Structure formats: structure tokens, C-alpha cells
Length: 130
Image 1 (cartoon, one colour):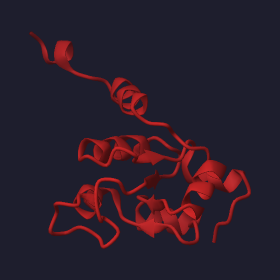
Image 2 (cartoon, one colour; image 1 turned 135 degrees about the vertical axis):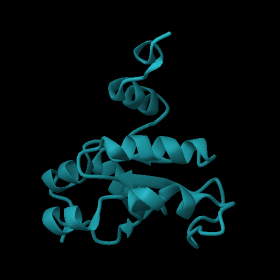
Image 3 (tube, helix red, strand yellow; image 1 turned 120 degrees about the vertical axis):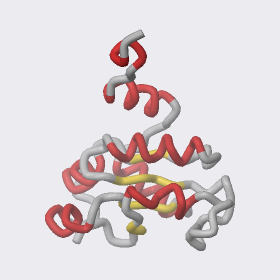
Image 4 (spheres, one colour; image 1 turned 90 degrees about the vertical axis):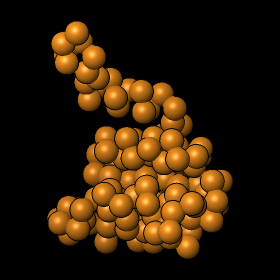
């Protein structure tokens, strides 16, 4: 069997990730943070510097996200108090965040989701940025 026969395309991987998420539009995400959800910006520092940031969002770059939010990890953040933490992942356009939220769900954080359209949609909606 060839590698192509067993490979999954990024489009398929993204569709699979999103099938398990109830993605939030930017206004829903803002409301959820007001109710206690943690908004996590996973964009690299250079991208945040270029595009802007969401005030109050926690910054956890993508390469360490699972370690910081796994309640069983020695490298977890204080906010990773259990598997019922509401985590909303934010990237630039809402692609990487879907994959990241799915990874958190695989760790047992079943309410993890992302912002549909990412930071670009957040800013376009006129929501707070700096």
C-alpha cells in the first residue's frame, strides 16, 4: 500500500477536528470569557506584534499548548485545574486553532473549542484589540 493511500490530507484533518467542535464566533467567545472561559492566543510573538492582541487573552504558543493545559502535566498552568476548564483557542484565521482545540479535546478537555475566523474575525467584528 502506498503512503498516499493511507495519508490524510490537511483538509481532511481539519474537517475531522472541526466535526467535534462547537466553534464560537467572536462575540460568542467574548461572552464566554465573561462567563469564565479562558481565551488562549496561540499565535507566535511576531504574529501578535504584527496583527495585535486581545486584551485579557492568555498567551500560550502552540508548541507547548498541550503541556500547559493537561491537568496531569507537571508543566501545566494554574488555570489547568481539571478536565472541565472551558478553553477557547485563538489563532490568526481559525485554522490552527481548530487543530489545537481538537488536540486539547483528545487530552480530555471536552469543552475546548476555538474562535471561528480567529483574530482576523475578532478584529473585523470590532471587538477589543490592542
